[in-house]
Image (cartoon, rainbow, N blue to C red; front, top):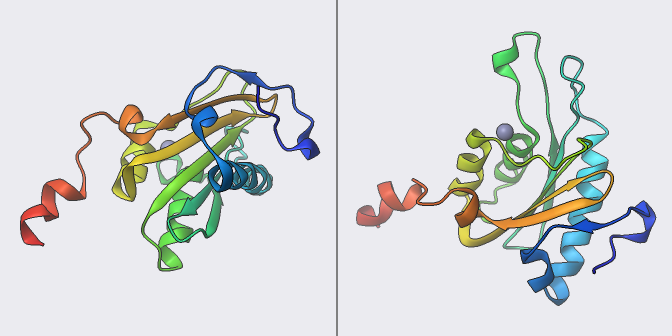
Length: 162
Ligand SMILES: [Zn+2]
């Protein structure tokens, strides 16, 4: 069983999987992503649902971007944490997600909503991994190709134009 960053002193209940296959720099960065997502979560604006979510991204260039959910009194305008992190990445001029982390305080793990799976897919490779945590240390990691099988994406629109 792998230890989470000591600073969190969480009990780890590993359901999983892909995380164990991570080696060296991948694994170090996964731990940094967890810290960043936990930090971002604290800034979540969720007065209506009180469901705070933090997300973080490592890009192919090794840079890290984070985001939190941003609710709105007009509920449909709410942004998910994953969407905020992707916006931060794109704003900085980057396009390729290597791995990503999402943290909530739900008692059971929650996975990205359907819309966010599509948002991640847009900037992912088939090997892109998404790590899901809750604050009690439950953890599962999944490849985007398992989160969104047979996904529709850039390849379907751009392949014959390149
Ligand atoms: Zn979402």
